[in-house]
Image (cartoon, rainbow, N blue to C red; front, side):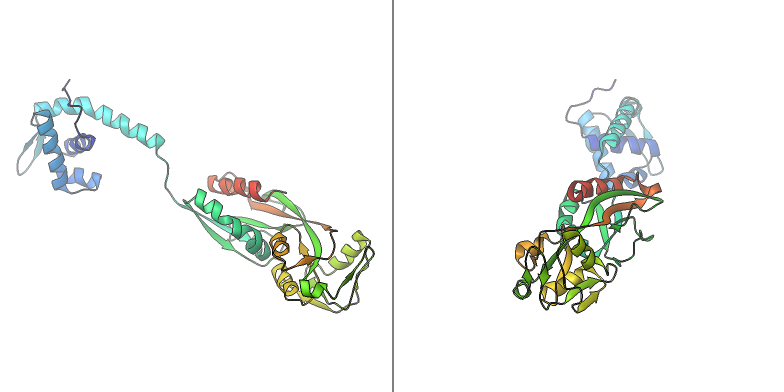
Length: 296
């Protein structure tokens, strides 16, 4: 076996094996993404370190010497084995992209504020967020994952129930001064903000709480929960807002609750993806993070 100096360059040995295999410095250079002169320089250093000539160089051919054949016989299995071990332990840097449909209020108040934690821990995953129509109870076919309100788990999809939709009455601090609240009623000449998809929500809250509400008051109908919350913040009326999604509004004082009674709706937020994609590693990474952060 050819004796090898312990200071011999691994790069030089790898360049030697490739040059011997292809009988060309240029072809070895293409495999190593370096110049042919760099390969020649590495092999010259290797020959100097070993004290032996490894190639016969002519203008037409590159052939191994006897010492070169001996070194190739000894070192090539080791280089191959080293490459196999490195491949097994190398962390993939392949980037992947996830498109996620998230309803606007959930996106702005809960999902986006926490998303930086996910992206910092998973820099190899690119996220595209679609804040699509929140009234459509369906999983958009153009995205990989949706986090949306459903009455029940959508049939034909893989779905995880996150938390139920609970609504609580709220108003701006200024409007609250005009509202009379006691244990039996909420009263005052105050408009009620109503979501287009939940026209009877105030009536349901009144029935479940046992408190009277001015259901004959003027109403302002809006088609998104974020619009309702913004309208309530501006003092346009009293609103039923999602409990879990409104914590920041209550903490900042932008909205104040009118009662601590919550209307537990039949709806819930779900994490949804196509059944055939449920085992996808990237989707599973997001699913695990969502369940840890948004499960009730």
